Length: 200
Image 1: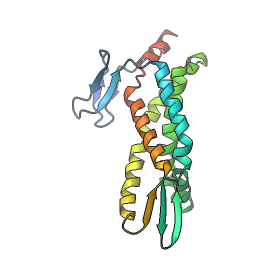
Image 2: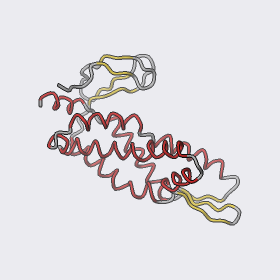
Image 3: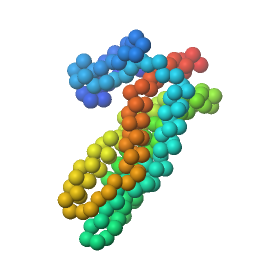
Image 4: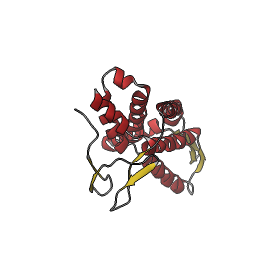
């Protein structure tokens, strides 16, 4: 019988902590490093679906629209997230390209898709509830859009002095998508779905 794990490891300091039932709208934090672990919220499946659908609508712009327009040495260029990954592959940096692809594209998209499948009831109807919950657990640890955006902004500050730069619409979409993913990471509680697995 599948169920929510009784003990969880803190993602920051690896302290093993016993999972306890929380009152509504309360959070559990690591007693050693104060890392947020999980919470209990009154988020309805329809609200989760609305957030994930919004994320899907943002994806084309976030992945394909230019993040930056740049003019350097009389040459105009632009870069989107997927174009950047492609350039890394072409420049013989497959490990870096693969890591960016996984953390900035595949894991965030997988998180959106997994939560949508759970909230819509598809996972239970198709009897893939345990697999989907485990996949969401993996994706939530690897979805790192904020790391990519911080790296991008650091590079942008270095370019300002040597090139004429303009921000693209893709950066706004990517920033909103990052905030949406962070909201899902904080507010999504897998416990009710694990309870459904236990009753099956």
